[in-house]
Length: 291
Image (cartoon, rainbow, N blue to C red; front, side, top):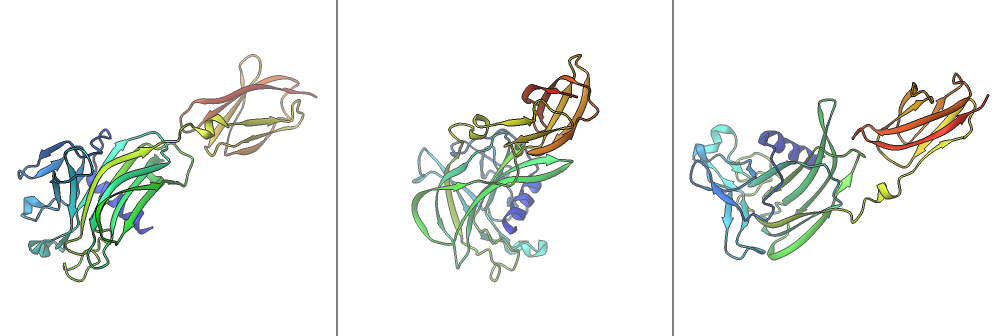
């Protein structure tokens, strides 16, 4: 997916992790060139130390609310031709430690995309699995329409895996079509502008999965095998102990499995089910084996 690749590339470039904050752009400082800097955000297009134009601005006139908002703009950088980077896209990234699964992402914006260009505001939730960062859920919004007045937008987050995330990545770009070109013929159009304010994540009112969670172990009593079924999308582990607390079976599964118990003698056994994501026990109970 093009959007996914673009966002992850910018996150890797930023390589910064800090607490999620300043989603209303009320906190500002200045960078090494004395230019406004939004606190707790990374301006991934900042090349001002090479005398490039700035693409990020603090705006205090008519924010959506509060005292300030942020303005991103796509600029032409004549000196950037030697770097093959003469079109600078206003882009902003925040990566934060985050272990929830929000249902949607809300923000206020106004924009002026030029000549078919598109703005982008997006959210990605990621997790590192076997030393590889994967996207477990994302939502993004793009538009090529002029929006002169502030408007509130909410985007749903689509999940691809049942994992709990490690991080959340929030990004905004004045030009979604960020193709490096000569400032005239690239997809990123010079002059495209995005104003952004009041970012907010929405969680479910309750954890519906947790409240409806079930796990079935059957038949009970059992002879040759037991079936394990659950509605949880997470990878889980079942450990079976005899009454002396000796571990007799250890098996991982995803939603359902069939376990051979033909070597177990008659008696009562205790099972414990663990989430392989959090390590927490999600269920425990007993079953009997009859011979």
